[in-house]
Length: 393
Image (tube, rainbow, N blue to C red; front, side, top):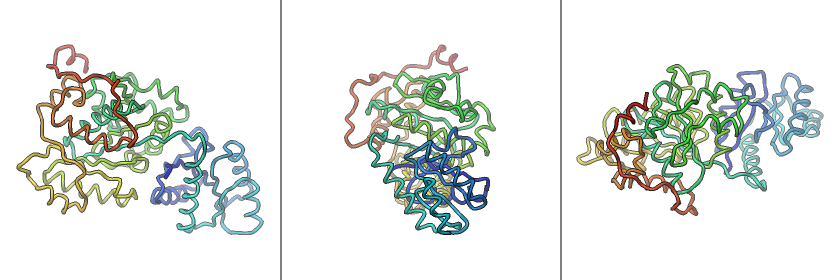
């Protein structure tokens, strides 16, 4: 089913918070636009108008939204269901009418109808496939898997691909790809009202594989607790411009990096077969369940998995109550050489690690996609030279 964007037009923060929670807990994935950040709420698939306190103002808002966006689904929310108010809402352009507090089954059905309309609209651009990589703890290989998955997706599909580094202060995506960027994610977050396709093209750096990079912030306190809505809006805008959006979310579920959970088609939780990783994975899985995303979107990736296992895979699955999606070998030397040379594993040779990365990537490709034979050729890895070292600072 289609992924939706929704704006909530209200001055009541509690109303906004409750509706955001309902939208994200439903079966349809919804990106919630903060109407205080976005340039125009009329650009969303669903607009929810709070008419509980001032029905007349709500009718004016609905008329404005309908004129600006004829295809958007507009939901009117009122304090009571008077026949006159329902009729006024429909005449103003509302598709649905609800009385507060909302009845969740009826609300979810309306969201489902909106998603079906979006999916069946002729000329609608195919939505991006969004992949979120989240580490159970630091050093498990989250960035390695995210970066190489992005490169392989671009290489095999030939489709537009961007990788976003959400980690504050110590983002390494650009480092792993040997690319220095003039701009970072902060430039996008601080200019959300101005963001469009042209502006986004200016902010991303280009890798020779064809992957675009929205580099991580160099500030340790940004993105921060107040950046969540802006992060969600940036992901939504990138999803409208690219076929694949890869997100390196680091190792913590904080206020700003939970936003990708709701947009992601797959949430890749990266762990090692050790006690700390498994304990943290258990906590992360529980937190994701509390936040609402369906567990069937979670892919547990066991990195540095080599016999004899410190903890057997069957025991890990039993402890987590979640299957391991894929194992990756322990190959520190190959991975370190790839990082030091700035050449992704998938382009550096046919190592066991590269083979497993390709297997992972193919699982995310549309079934009809054939390998792209015109992509960048594989290269042999090289020794870290002074020019490479100097370019990192």
